[in-house]
Each structure stands twice: as C-alpha cells, then as structure tokens.
Image (cartoon, rainbow, N blue to C red; front, side, top):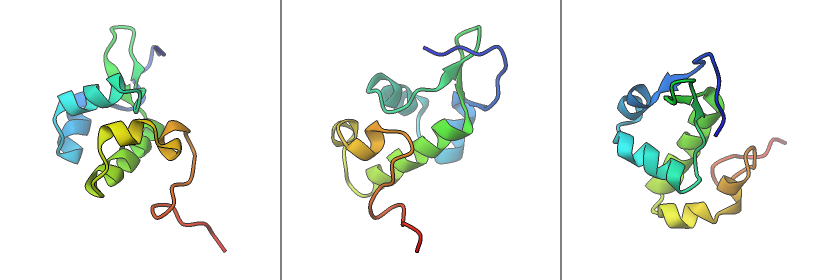
Length: 92
C-alpha cells in the first residue's frame, strides 16, 4: 500500500457522502482491486483526484448494470488512463 505523509485528497466519509454510497462499498472496491486510495501515516484512506476519477468510472459502469466482478476483469478499469468506449469519446 502506498503511504503519504500529507493528506492531499478526501477521506472515505466525504467521498461516500458526496457519491451517496456506503463506506463499505468503497472498501469492497479496494478489496476487489478496483480502487487504490493512498494512506496516511495513520493508515487512513485518502482519495486523491485520480482515485476519485476512477471511482466515477466504476460508478458509471455500475449504473449501466455491470457488476463489480465484471468490472474487476474489464481491461478499461484494470488499466489506469484507459479510454472506455461509450463513456470517453475520442477527439476529432
């Protein structure tokens, strides 16, 4: 796990409230390897902008009816920065 001294980002409670999901859901996404929040020296999860963006992609997939288990093996979610067809449009 990555650890940082500074807490540049949001904690699990703020993220769960903002997105209307239970903190346990965020923990499950982490256990399944879908999210990798950074940790403080005290082991508190910190969701930086990249992790929040990844969460938004995961939630978009969930809304479309895909399960966490499908997402786990989906190449677009497995690789950070990958364009997701139907969610990320290519430029001209």
